[in-house]
Amino acid sequence: MSCPQTVCVLLAFATVVALGAKDSCTECHSALEGRLQAPVTESAADVHKRVGFNCVGCHGGNPEAEDPGAAMNRARGFIGAPVRSAVPKLCAHCHSDAVLMHKYEPQQRVDQYAQYVTSVHGKRISAGDSGAAVCTDCHGVHGIRTVKDPLSPVHPLRLPETCARCHADPQHMAKYKIATNQFADYRRSIHWEALEKRGDLSAPSCASCHGNHGATPPGIESVAAVCGTCHVLMENLFNKSPHQPVFAAMSIASCTTCHSNHAVLKTSPAMLSGPNAVCSRCHEPTSAGRLAAVEMSNSIAKLRAALDRSNTMLDKASRAGMEVSEAILRENDAREALVKARVAVHAFDPAVVEKPVREGLAVAGETYRAGAAAIQELGRRRLGLGISLVTIVITMAGLWMAIRHLESGPR
Image (tube, rainbow, N blue to C red; front, side, top):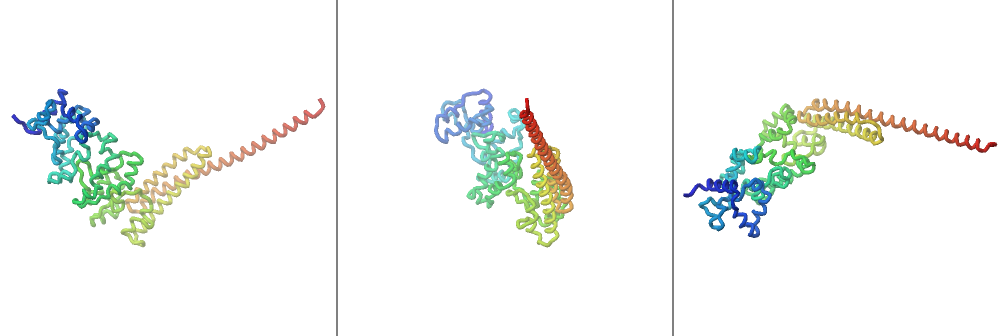
């Protein structure tokens, strides 16, 4: 009596796992060469194999049979290499089963497939587009590793490159009429710098904005919401700013208009004023908006200069051995004020920016004076030390002369 293909696969899979029975799949493919042996070699580090799952779980068949014909019997549920369109549902047989997943990985989510079918990838696969991404394109086939494994293609440090396999391939993306410069732009961004150079695994990558299993390109209306999940203060200030209703009325993407999307560069006062100011794209040189931008830029630059001046003085005093640790700690308040001022730019109101700038300038002035006082104290100490040394030398010379005089007299 035959059974449905899926049921047979799962029954055979359960039998191999539960009984630890003979695995003729591995024995046979180990004796082969090239691409037929590769699955055995690759699966050595596979997360499924480490917990006892074998080939039959995905490919079906009878792993206890010695004869290849019997082992690959379609009646026993053998499906061989699954067609691309069947891969998501095949993976979901286990990964959507809460009871099964809880046994092996209690924290593992079981809604990946439900999300996938709502994604652009899932919709295209359902529509018969075999070029869209499926589970194995991102996670691998036989050598699947956990997300936390640095060698996993979906590890945060490797994920952008994994997405780029398709999205940076002009030939593959041609039929979708999608640009292929996203990965190159991302590698110029402050997000990539934080992720790759500083090793900050929480830094945004492709999945942070687009999602992973439910990957959907953010539309104009959702971009601000995506950025706002991390940059909450900036979003709140922008929503109260004069730009928000204007951008909304014109259906202009808020965050990406000034910061771009993939090539999010490091911010600086140069974005507000100067030849490359983003404000100049919309505001004329003599307009109120442009003048406000220049005023905010000058305020931030003034605080930055005061901080640099204070830091130079404190560093000089510290290198000279003077005790200025309290002033150095106090300087952090001025740096925090600088961060607040940069954030306040999103309110697009010079008065809002000026408030933290004034606070920071007061602290920077205080710490500069502390460093200058330490340098003056150092000068006084050096002068006192010099006078002491001269006095000691004169005293020693006098003693030497007195001794010589005594020695030269009658015994």
